[in-house]
Length: 112
Picture 1 (cartoon, helix red, strand yellow):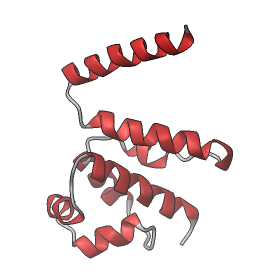
Picture 2 (cartoon, helix red, strand yellow):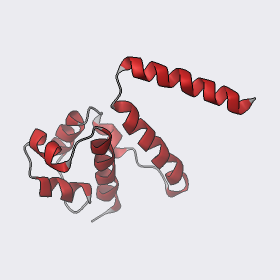
Picture 3 (cartoon, rainbow, N blue to C red):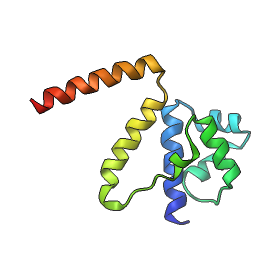
């Protein structure tokens, strides 16, 4: 299967785990079989746009986030950013504000 399917599948797995869903739990929400979801995550099958939109909705992300694929040169950085983004999506607004303040503080200490 092409790299795009593999990359999209990895994104789905990343956001699924960030939302603390098992494949079985997400499959139940989407009304699809766990093994089918596993094949999507591994990039083994062509998935319809309708299914991708349902997955994105269940994971509380925009469908475009599944397609944010970067070139190989920036892959390590983008993988780290994707992991951070996935974790942040599972937080509520007050937690995000705390994280923002902490991050600003850490970065200001690093620069001094």
